[in-house]
Length: 95
Image 1 (spheres, rainbow, N blue to C red):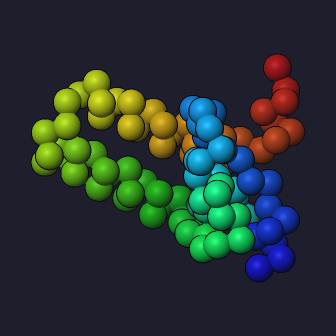
Image 2: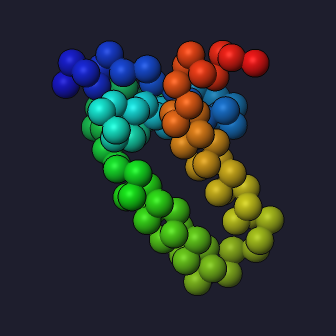
């Protein structure tokens, strides 16, 4: 649990409030938690699980006839969060 609390947690670059999910990468796993409750439950995903999640999300949006512009926005929000944790803080500070 200590590693999880010390992780470099980040919010999506598309987050416009304090009520967002936060993400971190620890030992090759992608962690997700609720920013309103940082001491609460943490979900942990491998890269393969993240990819499967995105595939399932696409299928679900297609099955429920979510219009393409809304599909694009949902995927952009999720991918912006993923991209924020894939790049290390040192790499992201480099121009």
